[in-house]
Length: 318
Image (cartoon, rainbow, N blue to C red; front, side):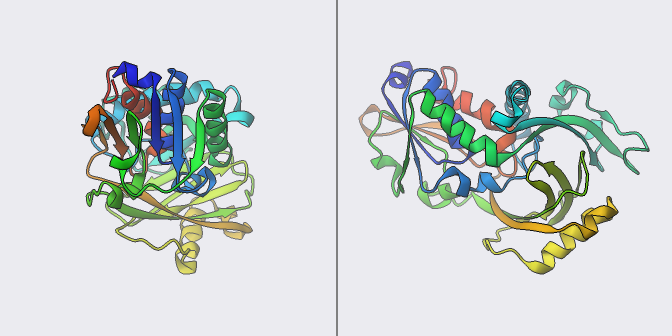
């Protein structure tokens, strides 16, 4: 549907998936309107720790290519970190071996087994994009505007009623009610942001079978500590006891974290699904609805790969 790209396209959803998809469409010549229920700064994406890594997202057979395509974009954006919010930062993934990962891992530059001095036990060392979402989301919005797109705050209650030749559904957890798609479920993540005591590398130690995990990411605004992965939990209110446990788990790796001043508590609901839904659907009158949602904890990681597939010409909107 190449002709439709030169007509009106409405992208519904203003998080990192919606913004990135809108940018790709606008830069390909579409007249793009982004409709978002709230500003990007108040979306789930704004809460993300935002380390590039395929985390809690399926299907693995597709995720690797989406993630690697996005990695190439982020590597380019690291040339202007103050503007884009993207930096390359070293760190270790604890409890992971290379042979446990998919074929995509062999194409991540420099990914290797960690040395004993870097982590006690099995781990992988990597230098990966770490994205400051407080900078990156506004930068994406500005890039969309510069490409001729528009951003409107409005609530959509029926995708079929959106008057445009192409409608792209990037509503994340909102797709549960809007589509409706009960396969989309929240996975609650709680974070603590503390004053950084001088830590320059990131660390993750994640048990995918557990509702808790341990990670810290040095962002410009503070050290982001995590976290939780509570399935089907909807509360956006930080739990003080959980926050204490997060700090304690991180301090077990870096004791200086224990005394760091707390700056902020964050909670976000990851839009989990058994598999990302990235496909087209015919609407009455020859219009097309493209679904691009269900990215779990890896929306930032796959944003550009999914956006380009959603935009076509080989993908759903082609």
